[in-house]
Length: 54
Image (spheres, rainbow, N blue to C red):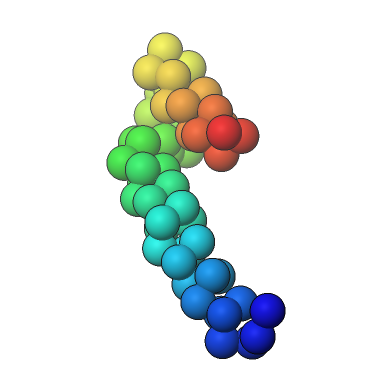
């Protein structure tokens, strides 16, 4: 592979997977327990962890 092909592959991967994942991740309203006393019941931290693991 040439350097420009590698860069194109990286750019495409970034656009298709990384940015999409980040967009999904920021929709999870996971905040510090200091700001959400019911954080455990809301389950946002679990959602965020699962998203990152997936």
